[in-house]
Length: 225
Image (cartoon, rainbow, N blue to C red; front, side, top):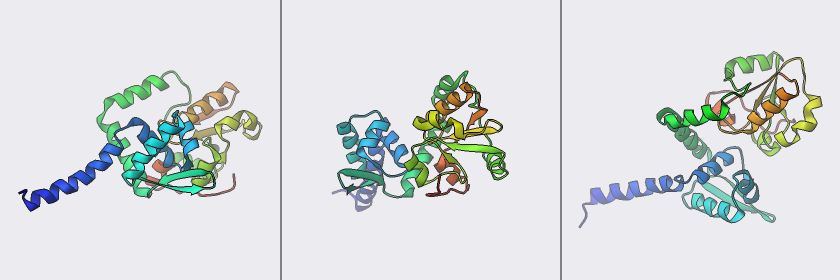
């Protein structure tokens, strides 16, 4: 018969392992990253992660079985959301651990950003000071539903797919700082490249809303764009 102490420890670590198994897929990690931005339908999550509807649903069911996400039916759609903020903090901690321990992460990022202008890191504290002084325009290029869920106070919301039509609303006499979901989101990269190609002074903020929140910066919710 197994020692009761051993049985207790085995049972506990088996439960911990459920989380590890749930996040062992790159696509499930991407889905968690997307859900950190706010609740989304299966259809939207599938499109954003380049998955079929069926594959996205299967991955989300795995995450749901491990209690990392929850789902509700809203009309014709199933809406997924994180179980709570701890899940987003867990994902961010895992990302930071990978960045600190795996040199390949930085190498992949450098290869992708190499030669692109406007991708230099922006000092967050300096950015917010300049924003309060009205010295820069901060541009949120995520889908508007993500902007409404949380954004930098005073940021202008122009989703990337609408940016071409929104150029007339942007100033040409000050820097534009574009941001999106975080350091591995390409929306702000595309935005900066588009703006620079049209003569704007644009740079990219690497940090996403979760990073800024963790650093103690204020985040606005449902502020009019």
